Image 1: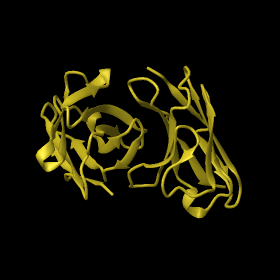
Image 2 (image 1 turned 180 degrees about the horizontal axis):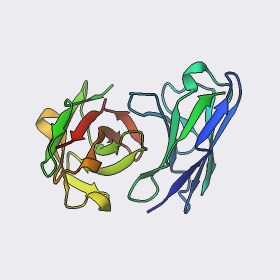
Image 3 (image 1 turned 135 degrees about the vertical axis):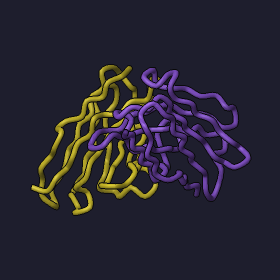
Image 4 (image 1 turned 120 degrees about the vertical axis):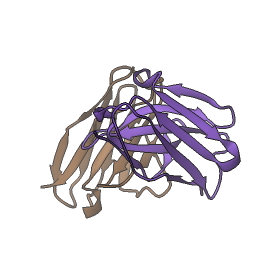
Length: 107
Length: 116
């Protein structure tokens, strides 16, 4: 099974700052990587699919990049509602797997 | 746009089974797969398995093989996940999601608590 490692586990930033979240795969997942946002008490929400495609309703401040084993989710300017948890997920090989998550917290 | 509506919270004894439903509202699953993902308290997301309702074929993560059953009723656009031999470690929120190899949309989640 493909292991996804997200870093850092926690990212402490201020509103308006740029956030850079990393997801590294144990083997190539080509461009088949998605990013999700999860707010407390809510189901995850798809943000980015296939590494760089914004899902419907995803604000333009969110962007994804990467291919192969190294991926990045960038939030260009943090809004108050962005201080939550983010997960990556690969769809290259069964079983689908998730990273352990990165929490973006207010500094 | 289709929404997924799940059944309510459950409290179960160790060794028993639980069955959670996921109904498509405002549409159908069409020919898409539906997967189940669980999240233990304070933990990350774990894919359990999925089904393509029109075919009725299911796939499971090896960890859950033999303990989870996923079925679909096309006539009511409902998918079911049944987990047996429950133990305390199965306490989690269980989500269904349309699986187009990524997950979108998601159901609201069903809390299953396993406690004696």
